[in-house]
Image (cartoon, rainbow, N blue to C red; front, side, top):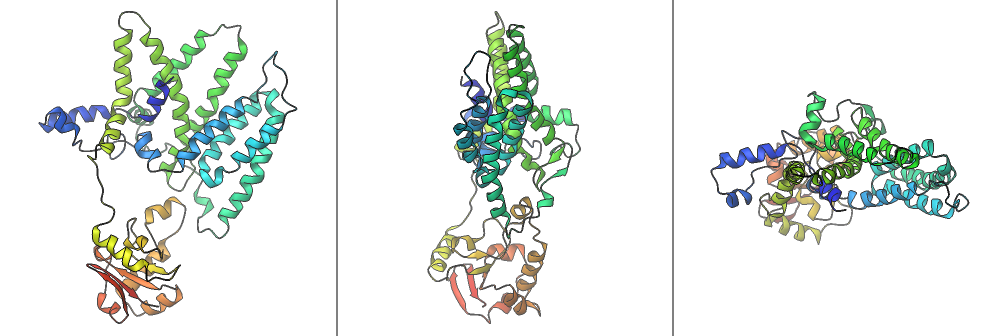
Length: 419
């Protein structure tokens, strides 16, 4: 039904305690506080998990295609299993080949989803003999396309592959007690998942071994994903393990929802207890979602001058012009259509790219030192941007750049043609 989806989309932990505390300390009315919620309650200083909608589906946009596609493929893989009394479909290999072609596109869509799909396929291969032939054809078709795409994507890439997998226990707990870390970040999700799992197990006739087997072996791959994500990092930035953990959340939400449904059906106090548990599971996540859609949180990416500068420069710059700018995520150079010599270090490091050399070159050129002209030529830099961002982040010797033609000037934004 709808309940697992709600638990998945409004995921959060014990941040509702901080939310309630902030409300009582604010001396505001309920509606005043509702439209001015001061912070996030699923991620930040106190929390690392993050709400699925605000932290993943909005910011990690490749998940918008990768997540539903991978869930579709997982459901399709489970259909490879043959149950006793059903006609054999082992000879029909067109479906595994077509699905393998689709799965082979994942390196271009969402690479971490391919890891999830591999783990699920591996456990299906180990546990279900009847599915092995189709899984082999599915895996072969996936490998043909996925390996070709990985080779193409990595050719000439600046990413260091060695930074992507390493032993890193505790995920992003930063040395805190791991049990408390997960309880704080996911709240009652894990206890209710365990409860839901055993309630579902107890609902089966113990002689119905196929359904019990499907229950255990269906969840084991996701439990393994949770375990591996707490032992290793699968990206240069350890927090990016959340791209794997989101699938564990999807599987766990189904069992937690089942536990809530059973509690709801209990006489006398079942309904109020289930309602309280539901609120505890979703209140922190719901507050972060509401904070986003109500515009209580609002970041300005570019000001009006930056937008006007981008429009003016874009009509003048040749294609593939290289622009030197401050290494920030919202540099105005992105509005010109040119290529940045260096962008935001956080993005670069999360892709395993060593940016230290370019950072040093950037600083030296802006200082206008003895080697500045030589570095401009060696690195084929065509333009240098001087704006409030450069002046606040770097030491800028603007007197040095006045020897070059001023290509575009709008307010506090100036673009010098240096090559």
